[in-house]
Amino acid sequence: MPAASHGHAGAHEMHLKLYWGIGGVLIALTGVTVALSYIDFGSRGLNILIGMLLATFKVCLVGAIFMHLKGEKATIWRFLYFTAFFVAGLFLLTLLAWVDPIFGTNHNMH
Image 1 (cartoon, rainbow, N blue to C red):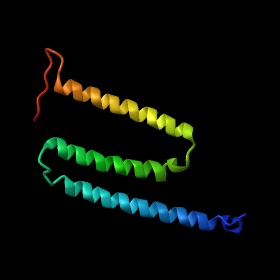
Image 2 (spheres, helix red, strand yellow; image 1 turned 45 degrees about the vertical axis):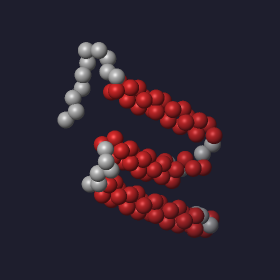
Image 3 (cartoon, helix red, strand yellow; image 1 turned 135 degrees about the vertical axis):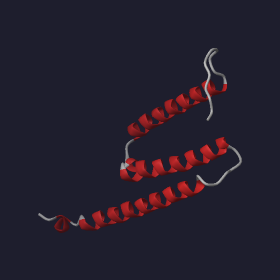
């Protein structure tokens, strides 16, 4: 039977509008990201922080809407929190290695 006879056509139409809307927001935010790359916020670290915050927001939109995570069970969220915790730890270890490198190693900023 066609999907319209089951009354699902309205639900699909609503989802398509949401997807198109979120897609438009993501395209607009990509434009904002490009525009922000031309603005100097005073330091390289602050520029990177602002770019990463905007990228994190866009990733959350993609995960919640396109990957259907907003309606998932608690188990999935536990895995996501666990992963985010370890990603944050890896970033912290990288920062610590950058600030206080191991003796005999060096890194150049170009």
